[in-house]
Length: 514
Image (tube, rainbow, N blue to C red; front, top):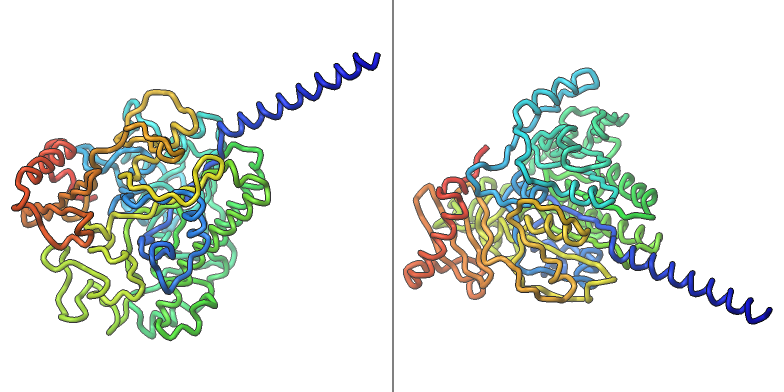
């Protein structure tokens, strides 16, 4: 009798262990994924990249406990960057991304929203056969998907697009022009307008540039500015994690921060008495600091629900640095060499922080800013933390593009359907394996023409207004100061041919316009 009892107990224990192991295996195969997409966050603004004024301990924690990619690239501007991220394609094709004009929703209301949607949708083509979207990939694999913030690639998006792209839930701005203000009278939640009492400005409280007494007073006149959008989004994000803690979920957070014009409810205590900074620089630094605090809130919420180990947190940015804290005698826009008074032109007179007066050195010493095909416009942070699979504190030299994120998430989630992409999954890099599958080069467009960066550090950039092509070797010249096209003519011609092919036979396909 006792023997049978012991046998029964042993079988029950074995069964429970088996179930637990099976649950653990299922959980390991279906990690939660959080993608934080910073807006205009220059790589030099992060503590672990050398930033000395703004402390970013939470983002630094991601780097310290995960993997940091040092050769990560994205597009030079908001809309094509988000399009590349969501579709997995680069932006130099003949049939490029359809990018709508912003401002469509400035006067939106519950009575005209359907008409606005219809007008925008009528101007958009259907998705190409075989094309998938970022949210769709995760959703088709059983993930609950959500997006909070500056939605899709715009500049004006619609509910139909959000649904087609695979989002179960979304809350945010459908119009990127309205996203230049941080006190929205309304946002969009799953196709419906949600109004925020106390926010009364149709332009969402957007203030002017450059810094003047008038703009300072306008910025700090808080009449009609009661609810700060970033706080709205963070409430929604934390609630989403609470409600989906049993997972799996895919959360995409295209935050507004630290895109300007500068707007912050209060200057952070770190900067109030910092005599190195002007008032508006203190406010801008507080925006970067708030983003870091928000990352910390998300990490704490994961810890609260014991989700840290099997949640992948991806932190990256849409493009390079931009300056929203210009002031006479400090930083001038259009960008001007503060020593000579000459305008920077991204060609003979390249922008550098030391010449332009940027106290934060937001591009980390690189040449150029947002909108440029110089490194300061397209080299972005990419940090990924996944305690269960990624060894702590790794630094990767692998060349990555933002259009690699879709195929990477497809591999992580087990998406097996055939689809078209210019990206290559870097999943093997995350888990410390080398399967030999990586880019020979990546390509991006810009307002002055396309550029190509190779896996071994060569860079071909164009300045099409003058029919100029330049060759750089980034490991020795990350500031792009010495053109090597005459010294290495064979390499120059080789990369020029590759770039032409990537641009579908016409370099002008990499000359951004909309």
